[in-house]
Length: 290
Image (cartoon, rainbow, N blue to C red; front, top):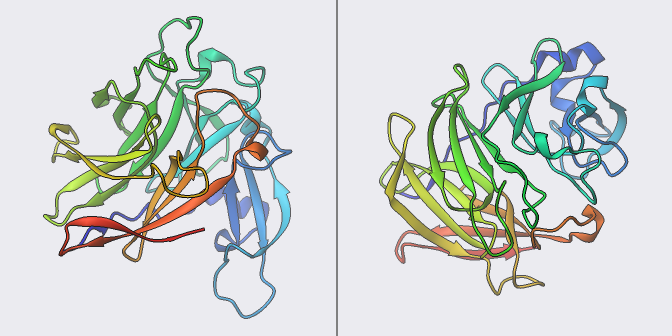
């Protein structure tokens, strides 16, 4: 059996229709160069296509006033009823992203469309030399109702203090944590033995690791294993995994340069690496990059 993806929640937020848009032909984004926070982008259907593509034309942009309250944002993840979870991410400065919010998860209510701070994760007092970043990755597991979030708050360039949290979305209780590792991109999947695992990218080395998750949503610490590495690949050779996802048996990793400093997104070139599992060799093989 090959690696098997755990698909993200497919429920679209009800508030999208309040803007008069078709949920299929619209997209939530946190990567608009001139729009801080979360936005809703209208996608234009120009031909006979049945669904949007990466090349679909963009139309109007909508933004509730509350969607800017957390400053610049990065990851987005939806739950089974369409609530939208997102995390702050400072760009060239921390003026719009106060340090006290760097470990906060924000949620946009599926019905009202209002964004509020949903959960404040543990945050120690900021010290000189610490990374300006806090939360870096977020992934919702629709099979268990657990939200996974990774933080590098408190880490320094040569001191790794990151934490990966497993959070029960209903109770907001931290079920478990993986301590002492800086993580950016994450996703969930079933391995060849049909065991659920969290796949994540190390923010320092470009290595991709995984850890088994038991039926109680706890990390099986002794199951940590290295899956592959981006080291030496692509135009830069030292990319870190910003985003990880599965699609039709292909593991796609968006790699960026990351050095624990603030840098304009326009100065962060990105490469996508596609891997496929070789069952005979029991390893991931690079099949494409672009």
